Length: 433
Ligand SMILES: Cc1ncc(COP(=O)(O)O)c(C=O)c1O
View 1 (cartoon, rainbow, N blue to C red):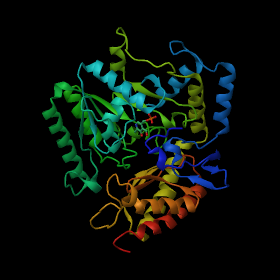
View 2: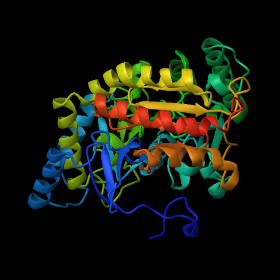
View 3: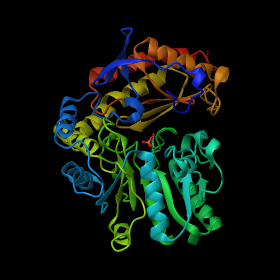
View 4: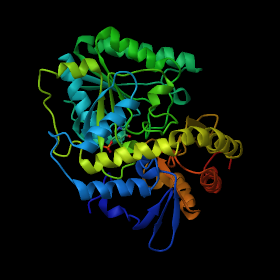
């Protein structure tokens, strides 16, 4: 095995023996509560029997078929997804994952507008393929950033670490929108095909945009004829306590990408939900893109079963309710006792703890993109979580609380108790220690 994002000689991957619901275990008998949902994709937990059965049934019936044909689970998955996406995002193009969804969304936007440039935010992640990694606004881009992709980065709102010296959300919103206007003016509006944003940026830190920001971006896009792409690969399918995060802000993009939670990652699947206007562009003119496994029957059967399970078991409602009644108050209580917590932010089953050396200065607990000795405080935190049976999501100076959307109240409390112990290890690296 050659592993992602890693120096191969420096890693020691855990051998996983099995998983069920919110837990997985190794061959040594260690059991972990998974507060990462894999890579934030097992929104209904591991091994849901109805989804496993649906995949088995589809495998017995028709395990694969080429993408140019109408196949029942493919059509049904598209129907169920289009019923839930906002506005007129009613045509579904299937891919095998999130990055391919971004690649195709950008291609559609470029062909629809006849323009080339694409704007994306710093502090973002959009995938590991060429266009997607160039759009990414985190250090994973640096090694692949060849400067020829037509991507341009700007600052999106993030009050806690404001790029605009703003002191409240209204200021942050207004200044971030002005900064976007200025970026567009200097890049040339007539050259810009799309603005790509995560509705609520995920891996980069779960920064919920202030009220009015996404509506403001929508208005700017409309004024300049720019396609608005919302990336809901991580935030979609229940993660934020709504089917799609865009519902929190009452905005409808022109294209919306999805993956991960669409079938909880049981079989690779992603896609683009397409507006009527952009679908119309390709009514008489061929769309120059495709994938051998687009709308794979096993992946689509898993999506159909997952969406049905999410409806029957009220998984989206659970994410909203358990987020509000257990996770949010639990994290607030931890923040009162642990000086390493600089800020908690999030909604539903989508939370970040921004860990700091010093609450006053907000200096991150470890430097941006730290590794080795410089990352020791986060390594100590991670080790303490695992020792206490919790598998944490850790990125730079943050831990994210992103358990399955059907996590039970008892599981959520168990995870918070383990976090409590591990945060004491982080506290030792603060100025308060
Ligand atoms: C917001 C967002 N977009 C795109 C991607 C890329 O998805 P994939 O890894 O399935 O290609 C990710 C993956 O984490 C993501 O979080």
